[in-house]
Image 1 (cartoon, helix red, strand yellow):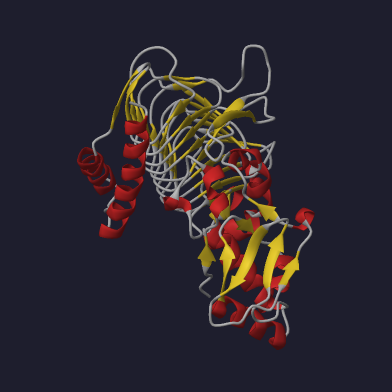
Image 2 (cartoon, one colour):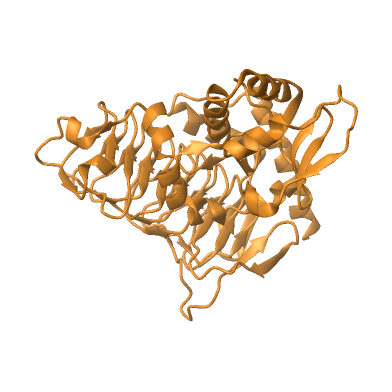
Length: 391
């Protein structure tokens, strides 16, 4: 069943994550929003009476779902009970809308406590442990995982805690590493590799084709998306996919977009020296605001990169398409398509950005489509106008 989505204006508060994560592509725990909806809808429909199944199918054929909304069974049933043209809201957030073929028939309000909406990138690491645990059964099924005690785990691999909480795809490769499930479940997908000397603690999810390199330390509440390369020390982070942190350096309470690369010994602070709340740049208001969080590291947009020994301060926001280098701590907000470091910044050339992106993506067997290039061109034009307005 195809689940249709729409993106609303409040996506601006998910900056620096952008269009590449919309339309169901946002990684929420081990699954994307689209996967959450597909699995929840399938489960609800398969266990429902025919009339409810027909209503769900009709709604999804003639309407669309907010792509920041994480579903549960009640969400699917609520959509099914809407009258054609009756849109669904919660405190001003539109959750479901009918397409133009249906005449407006008012709206239904849902209590906010019953709705789970992604409101900020920090939500992705704040609730990662919860989502890994709550979606474990679905992930185990869709990733075709098996419990460690039913697999032929090499003697040089150390399992700590209940082996029934360690689920691994049979073709994943483990070499002289430790997997500790005492604090939460560990999920390792097909084609993943955990190299010698790596120490992993749950709750943790490692997606397909990702590699955890030698000597890596990963703490719980971490999600590694598909085709990533991970090294150093990681704590409660989310890598949304196809990104590299292949060398030493610490990253905690952070969200890394797609196709990023953190150079050797890149480090991010996740706690202020005075233990005060972290202030974060908010794109919708164009100012720094209290996040209410004591621990918060780096939020990085797609296709951004840092050079060796780059230092990011607590609560740093890096836009998309940036190239960052130089000594000392970097600014706490680096706008999209920035090139430089410290106090010396230029606008990243669009042609150079596309050329680099194509080279990077080809290493994972991917390519930029003409539509994606046009979307990035629009974003670069917006960044250009902002850059020129500073002069």
